[in-house]
Amino acid sequence: MGARLKTLLACCLAGWVAVSTANVLAHEAEVQEEGIASFYSDRFQGATTASGDAFDQQALTAAHPSLPLGTKVLVTRADTGQEVEVLINDRGPYIEGRIIDLSKRAARELGMLRRGTAPVMVTVR
Image (cartoon, rainbow, N blue to C red; front, side):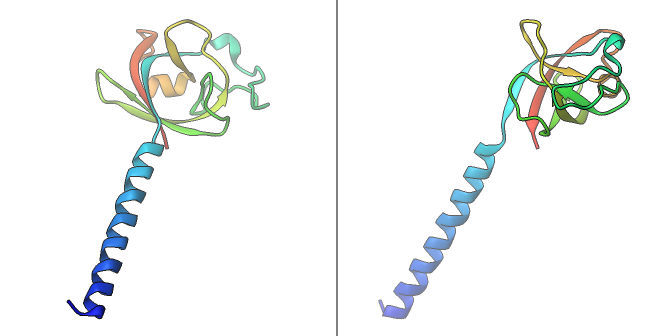
């Protein structure tokens, strides 16, 4: 095999490895969590969140125990497939077994106002 052909094959192989590695790393960077979502009581309207913002039931926001404030997440209702994107701006929930507290608007978009809780998957965007 000629030197040029070996060089070409080596470059192609290196490119393929680099693209494959980047795709794997990008997929691994996508954080997913499954559990139960709830939503804030109306009594928290206007209260200061962990980010310093006033809580607004009509904003698409949520509380999460550990994700960085300012993180956008996609919340997918596991039993219906309904989705909503929210911004993490507070800490919580503080009830065992729950993984995210949603604003009332976000809960409405997931169709969980009557039930109060729903099984969800949280995916970092």
